[in-house]
Image 1 (cartoon, rainbow, N blue to C red):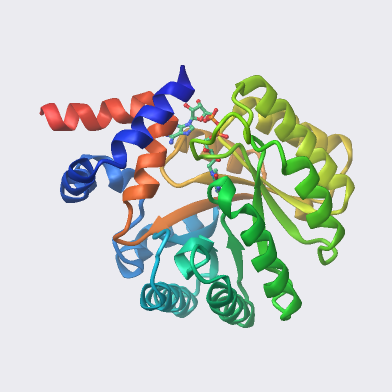
Image 2 (spheres, rainbow, N blue to C red):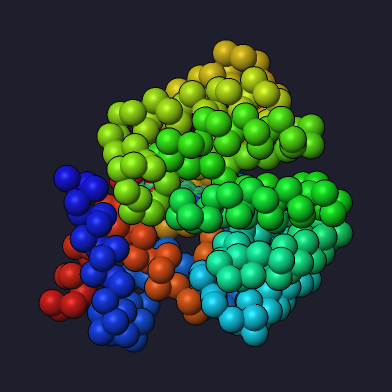
Length: 308
Ligand SMILES: Cc1cc2nc3c(=O)[nH]c(=O)nc-3n(C[C@H](O)[C@H](O)[C@H](O)COP(=O)(O)OP(=O)(O)OC[C@H]3O[C@@H](n4cnc5c(N)ncnc54)[C@H](O)[C@@H]3O)c2cc1C
């Protein structure tokens, strides 16, 4: 059922007039719950308050899929400015970037150059870059891009693996065999509507696979960023950390800004390292659509707003 719902929401979100209407009204109708500000300057008070309340941050400069060199360069400029603003404000420039924002879809060479520049700037300022994982067509390109960035010297750069993809257990082995010691890896369920040939559909199997991936990544020496709001996964992953007596620097619990705030607070109160993924920027439409697609109740909030 949830798969059908997700397909419907992401399908409708892609229809031109729906997109144009939503871009005009969506901020008021709920996007602001999931996005900290339409610019990093707007977002700074929120970011500071989150840090004061015990969360670390990874900032996502919103945007995805560009098809022209000038747009990729402008996007990279936006990420650079954001990192500078964060550093000036005394916040660590830890950022998440979608490789298609940097041109991966049409010029992997350009994307790698821009990614390398951003990752080395982030590390010079005491931060780092994580390359988000997008739909399955970009997995190879993203893993190659990460390899190039790391070989250029930005060794703290990392990426994401999606538990729902059939290929992920094999990718995890390859990625961690080549990774610098103690490198980070974010594991997620996966947010895109993927064909059954490439992705698992059954929630219980995705959950089991997720936990198996975390355990294997820990065995291979990685720092695992357990990125989910799923109570069962969080419970079992943290039990594994305790049972295996892993140091606190071997894991983080990562959650999305605006999603399950009470759970976020409980995890902080329990002493876990918690990092929030905080989107900023005006290009919030694709991100907001995926959050609506994850949970029917989120779409109901928007509908109530539309109907007054
Ligand atoms: C830090 C972080 C980074 C991510 N990066 C990527 C990435 O690079 N690539 C990628 O494909 N995906 C990414 N995702 C999204 C991920 O793949 C899932 O789509 C998303 O996390 C929802 O799955 P879940 O694991 O939280 O479990 P679910 O089973 O979807 O949710 C568990 C519980 O949380 C609640 N919940 C989940 N989502 C929402 C929501 N939007 N609003 C309100 N409640 C909600 C559910 O109602 C349920 O109670 C990321 C997620 C996080 C937390």
